[in-house]
Length: 151
Image (cartoon, rainbow, N blue to C red; front, top):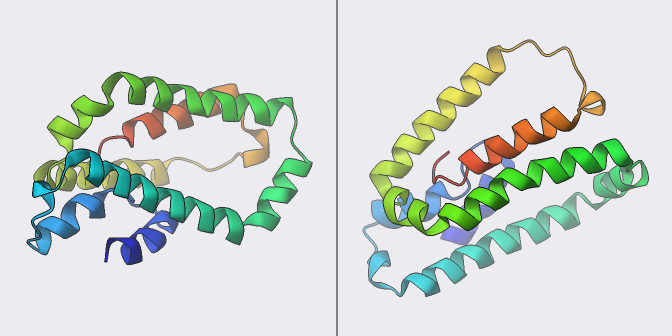
């Protein structure tokens, strides 16, 4: 059931991790009784499978982007990785322990929805080809926030 929901959730502007918390809770599964490391491994496998499917399905787009790869794109990508890596390494367990429950995930979904609604109100007068290092850093900060389940 979680795998069936994971794939489409990766393509939508919603937390693809939220359902990993909410579906077992809504279905009244005894999910929490399973070993925490086993649950984490299962979640990682779900994300890896979805990523592999996206890479395969979007291989032409990825090839096109790689063909035009330059220093600007490299800096944007590198800076977009820094914040989530730093926050993930420093706070992963604390986030899981304190913010991983169904109630906290639902709050995260509301916060994420509000942030997307605010972002949609901003003027859109730049193309992605004009993205710079600050854009990469902003994207990275957003991705770091998305480590909170539901966001």
